[in-house]
Image (cartoon, rainbow, N blue to C red; front, side):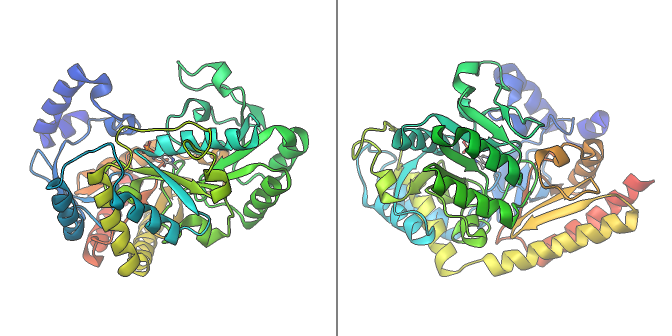
Length: 435
Ligand code: PMP
């Protein structure tokens, strides 16, 4: 496979050799190194619409979309124009701008539970700050998170996926101390009973519960209605805050986020990815009463040199404006349902055991026969089969997330033709896999 890849992509191989001398693992974020599927990553030269172009001169249909932000596709003309206009006025001031209020207003207008919002520069910053705010607001220490949910590289949230119901967290990265994670309680996603038990036992110590309202980071996993109700009810009745991490799902599964689809009633929502339109932006927002605890309105500290950056804010505003005025969600639903049906049929035909989960334009093909409701189930997928599928698709010009445990994303720039060619490629690859 390596020799095959080397002969297909000599320039990317050389670029990766060089990068590995200069950066840890050759990348600036680990998933990009293709560790889960073996082989070496393609190096990108440029992107346009639904396509990525690598330095070897090949074109790929892009199903990553920068891991979520590019819902309008790459280089949407309105976003490019907004960026050019912003660029002509300077790139950073470290002082307030009206564009920040515009972006705040757009977010508040879209997400029902947000009355006030603070802009930051990444999803990690948003979740880190949300956790601090929940603790500052409640005066309590314990945060509940769910196994297999990812909230960025916040120390206190980088906790191992506990396989039993409720395990007190242990660090899963060297450098994350037991001290920073001792107040993180890890439960299984969709496990109502363990959530009830945790609140019964530790209710007066729990500052908040953070979750991905539709999980993308163990592949797409959907919460049960019972789980959603329990989250709403238990946090309210115990005075804990519900934190919906919508960094991935915000403006993705619906204009108002997953909370709108599912009836979640968060106190704090974290956003990222799409709100920056492809530039570095994160945000956290919620009830005014809660948000007013943040400095300088309140005492919970949080700051950022490049927060509300003019370029990032311009891209975010342009993107949210289009999502509101020309909503692509029906089209995304249609296109992604078509892809889902095609992948399903291809796998059926080849006799490959699989299950597909999808919410709007987020979808995962799991190489497993069971419904995936938690990390325990997700971890039983056949990741070797996934790797074969991944490389088969790569070699046919389809760029998928390089791990079983990611969602793939459709953008408004994808066409039915792109989807149909992807399905045709998947038929070939799955036939190959089954022989
Ligand atoms: N929360 C969720 C749900 C995410 O998917 C991610 C990133 N994939 C983050 C937080 C962290 O965001 P960032 O990578 O921008 O720090």
